[in-house]
Image 1 (cartoon, rainbow, N blue to C red):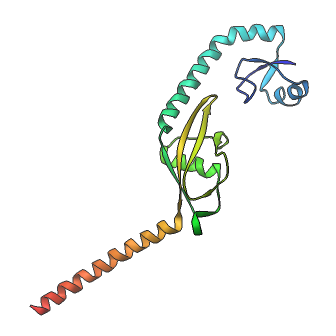
Image 2: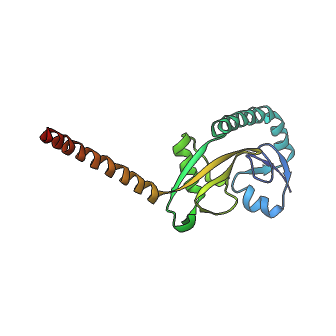
Image 3: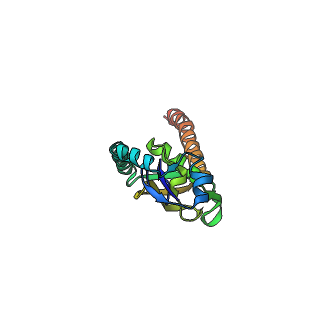
Length: 180
């Protein structure tokens, strides 16, 4: 069954493409969801008239995707997770966690469904995550998975050292003053 896609459909095509799909897929999913219309003579004639607008929208989408790629290229994102012995995580890093970390680091909204983790991230360290921005435009983001407990411990130790040094400084000054 031939249909005209009204928006991009992964694996099938982009807006304005005439594709051949199974009748059940068209009748049960594409047509009710308003993702496609039947490829009748009238609809094909309307499509020809709209081709210019579709091409302009496509150019805008590609330009936006290239801007986002430039902003994300070479970005390093840190995800904090609880790490146990030998660098193993308690749980795993999810696409939602990565999307939130990218948002926090770069102020760019990313779709968690377009993140390609490849496999479950269950170890601390450096990982590569691919983000499919639009069609074939993809960018690789470096992901650092760290330990919340070690960072918190290090901060507490640093604060304790500072407090102890501040407390010892007046005491040492008083001792040197009494010795003189």
